[in-house]
Image (cartoon, rainbow, N blue to C red):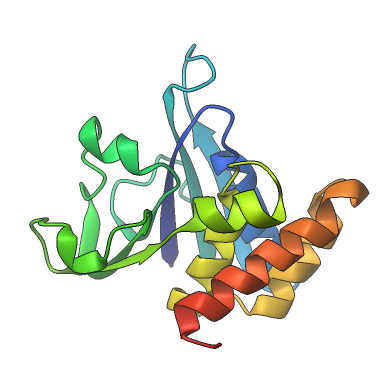
Length: 182
């Protein structure tokens, strides 16, 4: 089973990204998936979590994800208030939306740090600092847990029509950037 934890602030679309990833894996890649949020009475801007589980067999575990293969951080400032690496498995990947280079993060643990300035991409393409789909494209590139076509199909199936094309463009820019494609 592959488990992903999404760190975001309320209103940034972290749970939407978790759901779209689950949709890509289940509907378009014939896997089983779960996607669910973890938040209380927080308001817009408060730290929230989203989770995605993906497996090739039915998933019986409905608890919160405590150990994960991938952690995606949509807002770098969360790293000041939340231990985003808690529960990240050995050999896992921490994907951070930031201008900083991976080596600038001095974190304890046996995992790889990948960075992408998803905010810049989102501002240019979406005209808003909403980085959820951009980071999903980056996750697809670093992980291979779903193919890029499945991500694009999930956006078509799971987002309002007026948001689809711009979000797919942001996904592709992020996907290509992380893969080093010019």
